Image (cartoon, rainbow over all chains, first blue to last red; front, side, top):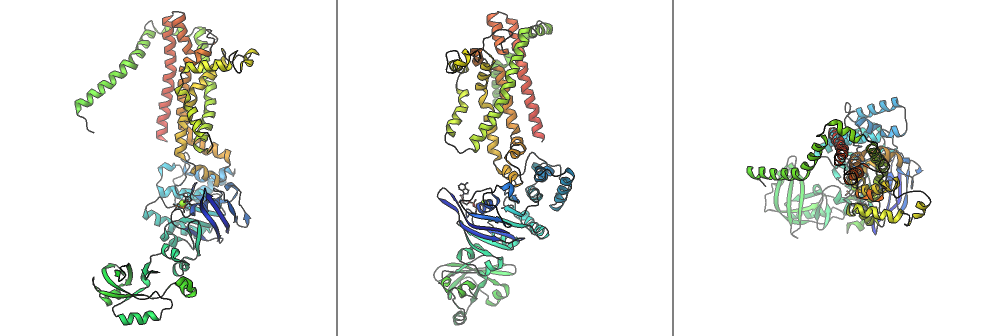
Length: 336
Length: 268
Ligand SMILES: Nc1ncnc2c1ncn2[C@@H]1O[C@H](COP(=O)(O)OP(=O)(O)OP(=O)(O)O)[C@@H](O)[C@H]1O
Ligand SMILES: [Mg+2]
């Protein structure tokens, strides 16, 4: 369990963290998600003690660690660019934390071999980091961080320097590892797909503030504001409001569209639009439209719906929101 | 740019000819003059008490200067790369000073500072000889060799950044452990180059050392001073050649050591 309360951090006059408070439940895998420069790394490094907060506190498993150096925080940290000890073999890298703690040689050897097996680097003991691929280096870094049995594992864009395929493999692997080891994990990423794929909780950061924190489904279905909505998943603009592209219904019949829209509470209304293009993407179809207001939008419909509509470029359709985010219904202020 | 075959060849010939004329000829000439009368004569000339004392003194100075420069060099490079303090620009300039200042000027300013009439002259008058003693020669050599370790270590520090050290900290290593186990090993090649350059320069320094040495044969002559004394004062031309060859041999040994280490570096 990690509790950050009222964290402030400024660089000169720039506020990198502006009153951040988060609770990270024990055993969870939480993603810190946000655009570049939003303060994700600063928050993570403050939890690790690699950065000193100007204000606020960090509590790890009930112990207030604000102002305590990273050595005594019981953390494991994985850096974006591996931070491998280049002059040491894989074995010595992984053993580093245990060697510092002066554990018996036999215990170190056993633990290192066990970890290398878990991360799939068995047989690489005597290689140097320069002789490993990026993905292997990062797995070594993970084993190194796990070797000291950290209370929390902190990862700063651990897969950011890897190509798409390796990235996807490694994050599934991380998810499985987490399900086995159950160490409280915080993962920084600017990739919403990565966050949705591995995390069981997501905290969205923007300009040094937390916009929303919760389960991935909650953030996707009930975003607290437009920023969260557009950062997590795709959006289309309907009369200036944000709607998920798959929540838009297309109809050829004008009256039918208006009648159906009247039943949706707080809906953004119906727009009349011209079809620009129809793109078949396997099981779904993307319809690109230009509204009367000359606003562009993309709509996702199922293949069956597309076939029923039989749209051709240049034709006119009526678009409306099938439903709106729950937040708009519960909080009318957001709907305006 | 593609150069034609003849053009390439003539470039090579010019470059090689220039090197031979400027560097090769004098070296070969000295070697030839040294070994012309036979190996026995050479050995006899470098085994005189004065020559052995000069060799010992040169090596002693190296042995004192190298560790001091290593410590100062690493600390200064760390301050220059990592430090955020006022006067960093000034420190940068000061480190390069020995490159700009003539060694003779270094010698003169040391006399002004430490000599009997200098700022710290009291020490001299109390019987602790800095100028015209070993401390003066060490100070002069320290001054001229000061930039080498700093300037070799600095770019390596820039390159390695602080990630590895931060990783060590998160794994529980304190500052001292991080320095010995992470920082220093990462610097080892820069440090090696710095040391080799320092050794070569310390052995070869003449201008600064001659100003602050009493120059007595068998007492306060380094190898460079011996070469000079034999040639100029004793009119012992052959002796000067022999001592010069000895000096050159040490330099070549240092260079060889460096290339051996260099090869080892590429394989690890
Ligand atoms: N040492 C520093 N000095 C000055 N400004 C800094 C420093 N470190 C971070 N910042 C600023 O603080 C802000 C937040 O930085 P941070 O590294 O936390 O962003 P981030 O969310 O991790 O972004 P990215 O996805 O690009 O890594 C940025 O605007 C950055 O310029
Ligand atoms: Mg970052």
